[in-house]
Image (cartoon, rainbow, N blue to C red):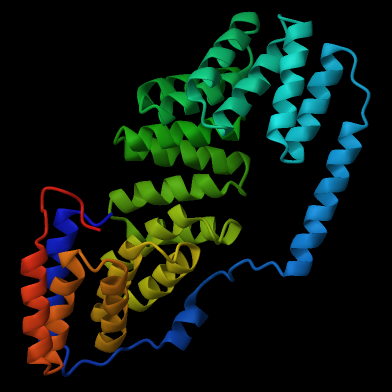
Length: 347
């Protein structure tokens, strides 16, 4: 969402940028942007997808054939189903395992983690509580309970549970990573950096640890380190929208609009119906002195949101600089007629 502050910032900048843009030329072409990007987007052909689905289907059938009689059998099969992405089949087996053995701590912990993945955070907390009541040494049960607390907005409890997990298992990268995120949400960016660094010392392939640490560096305005970490995160997960959003903010803050355009384009490809990304890319194009590209994006938003005054207000000064005074007055009048509720988020 584009906030009131962001809207005024974008509108103010668009006027200033357009007034000084006549003598400016872009220093970086789109072709150069591609060369400067440190990762290639992951693409799968239809053949790749079909092969993957066939392998998964074969694995599921193989798991289904496993004979399960004891609680341990059902638990092991549930873990195999989870690896195959069959969460509901896994949930059924974990329920059976717990029914057969009500003191099966690992089964409660696994079901709690599964509930968290299914966004049932209260059930996750209840199962993790039960698992820890039976066996207070289950580190991952603390982490999963902490993550559920975090999803419910209780980051103090998330940090507490992650630290309890670390006390049990000092090399638990998952715990350090999520402790770092809790401290980020609590505004303790240095502690976030410290915990995420420990997670990466244990496992340097953790994309979210790079993202979380990069986000903390971004808040501290250490943009070089932020960009390094966020680019590293994207090298592992090139289509993760949250990583792209964090990095594009760094590009805009460090006056690298062409690179910002590249990331906004990636975000638009991921979600072509989100008007906010087109508005933000238009602002990046303006910074890069590419008025026509900005105009095209705002035209798109006008078609997407014809009853919203924002795209008209942003498009008006571009039309004025292009000598289209009629278009300028039309957009200005339209934006005033539609109005912008500045007490609410824009778009």
